[in-house]
Length: 191
Image (cartoon, rainbow, N blue to C red):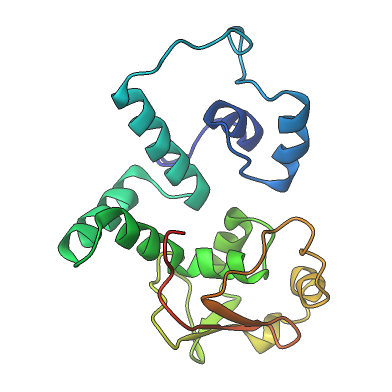
């Protein structure tokens, strides 16, 4: 197992970070809204500025399923562009192919979207793409490849079966679930 993979379950990670990462973690998070471990129920004292920023960075990494190195590369790209660095960084992370597939409703989670991309079920502008970190640009059309449309996960997505577990489709994506296509219409903003 590579160093970039996390060794703990998504449910424990969700509870320790204080955010819900998967639909499965949501029900466990309701029952136990405190961090895991022996000292989870005890009250935390005031955290330092460093601890708060570290927790936010860890949340960002966990939400997008990226490694420290990938986050550093995205941050370096965001620093070079004009505008506020945090807004540009979120825009770069939201325009990753795995994030677009997950936000479009083709997959239940970012991890599942990443797997669908790596297993070569997703295309961009008619070409097969198998890199989850692929940056989708304005006007690009992300679609499920014709040979893959018969898979259960895509049939469920086309019927709207993922609607109860995923968030509302953002307004920067123009999604057609019946055709399993989505168009990237404008840059995402942090809000």
